[in-house]
Amino acid sequence: MKIAKITKAHMAAAIVLSTTLLLAGCGTNTAKEKEPDVIEEETSSNKDLVIENDVKENDVKEANQDKDITNGNDVTDNQKAPTENTNIYDYILTQYSDMVQNDFYINLRDSDNYDSSFGEDIGLEIRTHKQDIYYTFYDLDGNGTMELIIAGGEHSVSNPTFSPWNYDLYGYDGTNVVHIFPEMSFGYRTNFSLYENGVIEVFYSGSAAESGVDFYRIGTDGFTPELIDSFTTVGHLEGDVPVFTYSQNGNEITEEEYNASIQSYEIALTTLDWIQIQ
Image 1 (cartoon, one colour):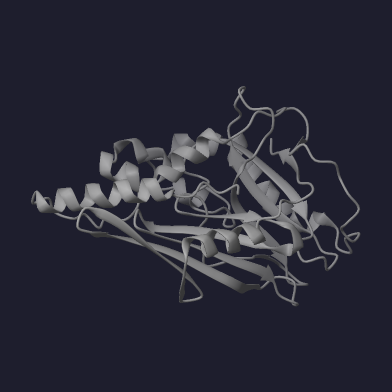
Image 2: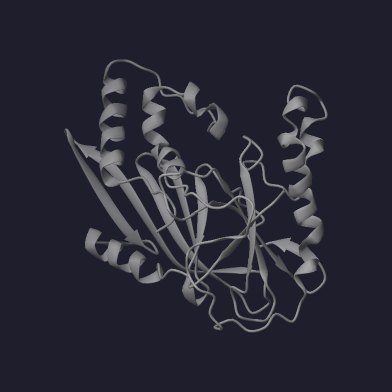
């Protein structure tokens, strides 16, 4: 699974640490989550809560910056020829290109013009630190119209392939380009992966002790995500022992059922061809 999830061990460690701090008289801070470029300023407790961000950066793979970048798989003919030209997304890609060419507007960070410098379709989290930006097209629902996927990450010479961190997913409603998940901001605590059969996996983390995985497919209108399955993990302490509860669509299941059900959806795509935005 591409998304770096909070492991059971990390969750257990964070729960124990949180309980110890509470018994020692430390107050609980419910401040809003920090952006990726300021994670280093968090306390060691908060680092446990966002361990997935560290894992994510270790997963970014090396690729050629001057050529189209692929995930190492051959292109197959399992998609229909798109009936809509991908140039419908040109103005979206222009916004990202402007951001890249202007170094993410770092020189304006302390000015009143900083936020307004970014294109209106660029998500909040992808702009928080300078990184390589990529795009690719894929017909997720097989209706003949390509969707646009935006991703980011830096290369690592220690890895032979490239696996970017997904930041946004765009579709077409027949008239306008739209965000497939307009209410979600992908990046830090929420992210998505794409799988075979049009499955979109959205992973989110509310805290070290609670996380969820939802699975969607695009509806018949070609742009509305429809929930097909939902899983949650909640941990708590019984004495000094961390105990986890697993649920599917609100019904408690075993850990084995939880893992098997999620893995049944995670069938890797045969190909995604990533192109770096210059």
